[in-house]
Length: 451
Ligand SMILES: *Cc1c(COP(=O)(O)O)cnc(C)c1O
Image (cartoon, rainbow, N blue to C red):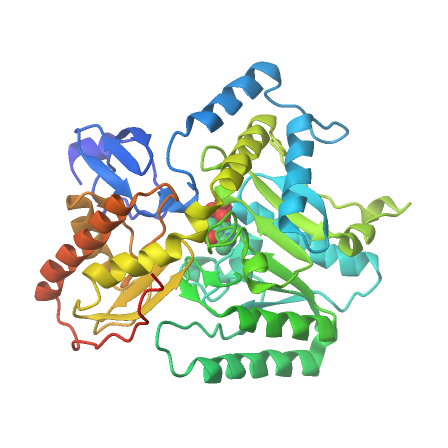
């Protein structure tokens, strides 16, 4: 550690402060570009940890924030309400469709999940169904960093030190797939049989099942087919288990539709939203539910109240930013609906013949593939760090999850920029693959682009 690093006062998230390089200082950002203090420019290929949707510093949202801040910056949300929160709730319910009728506000994804967890538990408790206290999750699931959310994502490799305070969650396999996967049906059937077995044996034990629908994010951008979600939904209905969608990452266009629930034509009982909700400007989160859950809390008995709230619940400035962001999304639906086709086109142009890639997969605005490695495909694969540094040196902000490289750009990325990104990956891989011991050249099975 240098003397300079010794004096640096900040402890950064998900960062080993002893070995990691000093953080890069950012001075401004526009569209997909992030400008550093030393004058360099990076293309933000991961939407600044998945929160940005339109590109940085969209003036429409900046203006909405300014105007709201001049009018009402914040007010207690117990016993009070305001227009930005009401407008946003109505708009969200329209967009979500299905049976959703109520919106509960909080301020980050982990918290949206904690609220879902408490809603599900207390719903059954209020009904006197005291046996329903456990949850089902999926292998590789990630639901946030607070204790309840860590428990629900119990199979994550991050939680070793905290294991003793996490509660047990029953997990079933997540049958993730990729282009040309010949075993996908088998994997889905196996996962469903594991789920069915748990439910047949002890349905009365489970309050809810939580899943990242269509794409597991932190677990490695692992994708399932919509039909799998439909089968999961059928089983939850059959056994009376509440279906909870964690769409903190997949919401707001990420999967190529407004929400994964729309793309998969499914209807969970509870949904968690955050990340892109306010366009990447401000923290905000929502846990929405259907009328059946909501009614389970209406009572003369004060003990049936949902005891949850945060200082900044439904912050008016965040809500105003979200309303402006949803308006922009509605005006630019093509930007997320057409991104998958563009990913495929540029992948095929630059990477189709690249050596050492496998498990190529796309879902809407997200593209991912694994670099073949002697070590296991997971977050701690050391390739990730090597690649990250080389990407930065080539002007690309990409943070591989171990040996999984993924792209999740803001929707405003142009064809020229996207082409530059894939070309940059090709060049970095050519350098890196020379230096790493790779198993083999893997022939790529990939369907021709649609256009
Ligand atoms: C990021 C994420 C969370 C946690 O959100 P935070 O705002 O980081 O607390 C929860 N679930 C999923 C699927 C996520 O991707």
